[in-house]
Image (cartoon, rainbow, N blue to C red):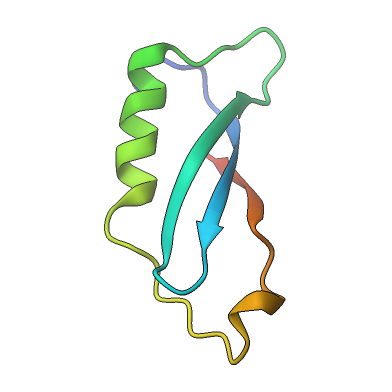
Length: 74
């Protein structure tokens, strides 16, 4: 993030459609004490992590979780 103290980390939690590889219902949480994520940064993050769709090829799509959480470090 431009202007953010380094190092940093953001937890991204989203709903995943295993068949289409699309993500939605994003939640972003700054993990560094005292830091926050602006609305503009959240919009940017949502666009970046949503496009293109993910290539998930599960044998059984119902076996994958509906929500995932990933920590992005920078």
